[in-house]
Image (cartoon, rainbow, N blue to C red):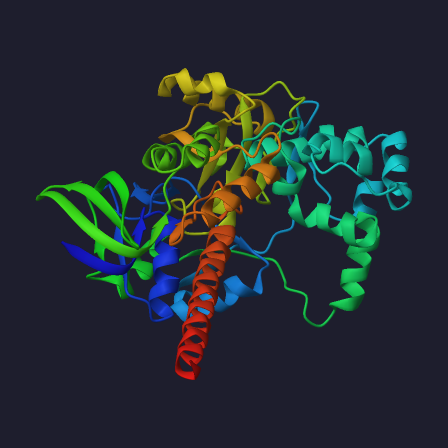
Length: 468
């Protein structure tokens, strides 16, 4: 029977970054992954000159911790910065409109009516909210008005997070905005204060992929863990064995067991619920109740001459009120110059989520036809795509719906009763790669802190025994 200080279950970005951080801090780690390959949903595919991403297309970072991680891991040497462009679009009444990113631009944009613009200017005078369980929709309506929700924020929540703004928890989905309100009383005051107080140390937002695509992230994080990763290890059972966790997995070589002082589950909530339900029914129930959205990624390649729109920018998002099946589109050839053959364009289009859950039941031909039809109307495309690829994720993203911040606190409370067990997956702390890296760093720091407390407790007990 194997024994290890820390066993990590799940080889997606959460598990892999956790393993890298713990290994880098000097811990003995072992990682078990059920599939034959590492990376979870992250995978890069190349075909006929087109390079597509199965899920995440890039990293959008403004956290200094992530910058430090990239430097420490050597991933800085593999970064591929996106093409400098500030143009982003929203679908507005069936037409693409520039989406301004600053307040001054919003006040002159045709996206908002005069009453909507006046409502934006009132934001500094809106009283701080008292509810801890506001939805994203309620929070934005209260602070910025209906138009900002309907024409912009609903597009972000449904397009980027696949969630319903009427159900999504504002504390979990918009942590930075809700924190600004709580600290400064308004979003406007908070943004201004941060610019003044943090002028020299404010992080610059940076968008990037990697040379070779996002799979390079997985490959480079795996290299220091060679010999510490086991694939095709599907977990059957978890139980306590004294002060250890006993984990059983089915492998090509038969059943394998491992004893671990620390167990880190980086698996989707439904699987974690099944594994933990017998040990802690309340924790199992909390995890089982987390819903996931299905998302389809429809990659379409066209010859440049087929498209009338200049395609200068990152792509577009679709507000909830627009009657389209597309949640949004990323213009990958514009973001990264090596993603499509010369004189061709690559559009990666997102469908489904909480907005259109029925798309999960469509076949690929229907997905392609729908995406192609809607893009023709928006971009002035002539003819059909000359190249296609479909990636369908039935459990793409956890939905931070309902009183989700309270759910996370209840999960944390239950973990206190289970020493040595840690949960680190995208249903806790955010779904982006940036969030997963930060959560892995926090996990390593928390485990080090607990070790220090144990050492202090042991030292104190030894001193008391000596005195006696």
